[in-house]
Image (cartoon, rainbow, N blue to C red; front, side, top):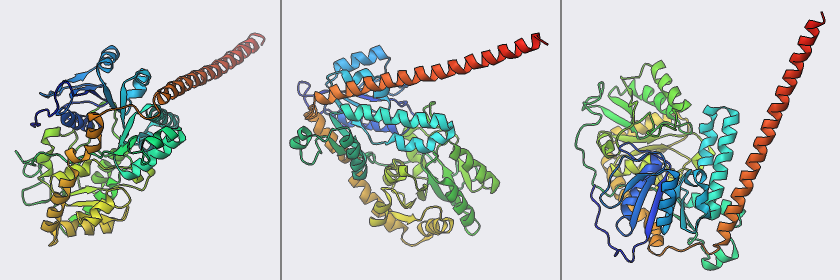
Length: 461
């Protein structure tokens, strides 16, 4: 990957620190990919440092890619003019909100909606903790943010509600910009600007059981609890009975960040495929994770791409990042209705949209897209639409902001409230822990008392 040279002079360029809690390496998940692509673009016009709180094994000629301890992170924050952070960055290092640095919060992923499903794998107590933790984490950063970016207009409406409840839609913010775009704007995931070029066969004639003549359906990412791969497996089973050349390939099962465990849905999907006798004949699982720079070799080996999900609140506000890779590869898309991409696929004729959990409709749509006469026209529509979604275009509002970064109109009140809110929640958390320990202590005291009573009774016999 080669990036254009910097267009701003060193004296004009702000110093930008980008922080991700995800792993930066050859194999990356969505948060790391987004941080990496943002760094690549901003590195053209500013001095950039890209920091992972988990681990970094990438290099780039235009900016350093680093892993930072707490003390090292303090040094990076002191160096920077602007900090762009996502996810747990602020929860793991809450002192950041107390600094005077200009903070951009990347809120493209409503994590508290995701964990309603993913938390089911952890047990009810852990699930409740995770939801509360995510809400607190998001509240901390939204209360302090000078500028917020999200993935869609629907997400923006969602976050505006949260900001309103926090008092951030204030006279100062409104008078500075009646649209509030100066406070929060849409910066979606982007389509790669690089030309999609295949350098090797990723699937065809490389995976045992898939030949060069087969029709390949690709699931381009991980399997999480809010998705519905089960209906897809059943649809492929049904379709394969009349179209034996149809093959389904799941691109990645093991997320590259070790903190993210395999989901219940991934296990259920593998089990269903085994029960139907489809594994390694019509359904194939890549049990690892594909290298970021190698993923195009798999995508270009497919005939159609899929994204199927169940109806959850997560679906309503999701922005399926894997679909951007589908657009990049020029793949027709078959997707479940109900999320933000469904009307785009339908209106731009990028493939087909089907009802949720409808095996027959999904099988029919896959067959029509793969074997119908419109496939070339659909591919052309996909390629044309992809040009509207490149990273350079999607990052436009963020690029404009970092050219002339400023604190939010309600700063420093926003910082003071964020600090106060965090301290109050910290005290509340400590008080809750004290009460929990007190209850445990009382229960243990009662057990000891009961044991002493039983021993006394035995001695008196």
